[in-house]
Image (tube, rainbow, N blue to C red; front, side, top):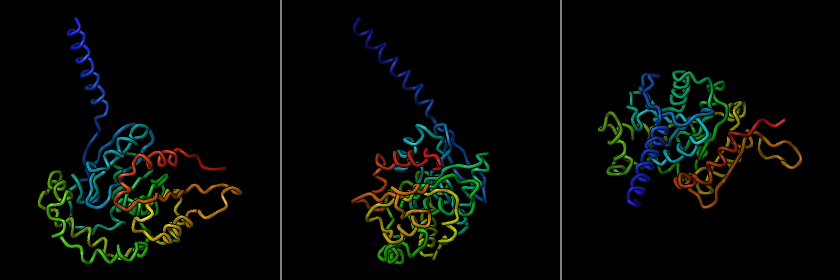
Length: 287
């Protein structure tokens, strides 16, 4: 009798697990935009939020854990940007302008009028640029570890890229992940060249343009994440920070600097950062 009860319990558990797994299965597809076939996944339901990964990353990297957590209360649209993950590269400069136009075109393709955007590193730069170039499509932005100008990086970060070469990436987890997912498994060196060119190319989103952008921005940084602290403060001031908050309304934009945290280890702070993201995205405009 006990054996029968145990087996029935196991079968019921397996059935429930199967049902739950089926409910959590994302919608996937390829969006034909701007000469690309952008791979995307849609998880969960609720208010839409676009997730933009960093350089050499993809949806299936550590980002997937963040996606699962945010999808508990939101419709998460995660994409593999140009040349990353399941999205093949094309002969086009990987500029923040081009990548932000891809995000806007994807929202049009999915018939989503506007969305919040969460970006990390390269994805954070794209998120800010999307808010500048396509203001009607962006409600709020979470920018995790990225400057608005190239000189926002500390000197050591800018000095690193000229000496960073393809040989240093051979056999890396990034290369292995690329070969596993990308439609062109032999194209990793081309992706590397595109990303290095992006890193070396001078860029400036424009202080006036960032200030004028209507989307509130939550700047999230580590205390040693390669972006100059003065530059972080400058970006936050442009979005209304640096006030006596006890005596006047708080700005809609926010700033968080995590202790003992680098550019890379920010990705390990999901349990700290995601609740802050949810609180920011849920916040109503102050009166």
